[in-house]
Image 1 (cartoon, rainbow, N blue to C red):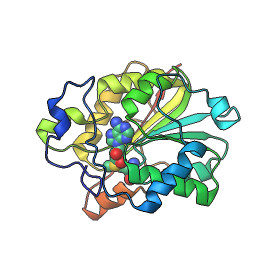
Image 2 (cartoon, rainbow, N blue to C red):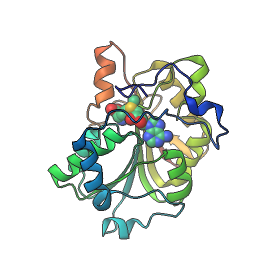
Image 3 (tube, rainbow, N blue to C red):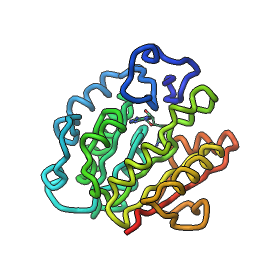
Length: 239
Ligand SMILES: C[S@@+](CC[C@H](N)C(=O)[O-])C[C@H]1O[C@@H](n2cnc3c(N)ncnc32)[C@H](O)[C@@H]1O
């Protein structure tokens, strides 16, 4: 990632190594301020979940039984905090690889005393595979995933058939998968891939109107400044 957390144009040093799966990000450590480092050191033991190849016990993690919504790639966490504040009866697990974003998420949790957010700093693909039980989620949010606009980078996009099949399997019947993007062809890709997943059905005909519960995200605002449109895609698990 570049410093502004957008994909850069290089292939990244990790491309030469054998990989278990194609990464949807290139990790740049970026410049972590002492404050951000402190936020992570203080936040991780309280609201962090360390990656481990072991299913998360939601009740033990949150100290209650409530619907659980997973967010992939929360960026700086502002949207996550706003949604979690508006939905106190739902628990949220946010996954993000970018250190400054994770630090900021912990800062927001501490400042706003948000009891219903936990954070995992790890590749979402591995977290899904190893830590999220099948049929356990009330919803999944994937807001403005890295667009990877160059043709040779399209394979890095998150929303592709194998991941969507995995996400669908993690949803409880009736649970929803909500993706949004400001890149038109990625929006169409989202609609096509979700439509082709047998476990899912569209909540509307085609693209969804932006639902009230989704605030403007940082990357959405950036896209709007650049004159982009916005495409929301919301499907439910059948059954
Ligand atoms: C373009 S930003 C959007 C951030 C935020 N959702 C927003 O709308 O402002 C995409 C984020 O996804 C994160 N990301 C990309 N691939 C990821 C992965 N496999 N696991 C976890 N986070 C990932 C990136 O680090 C980045 O912060």
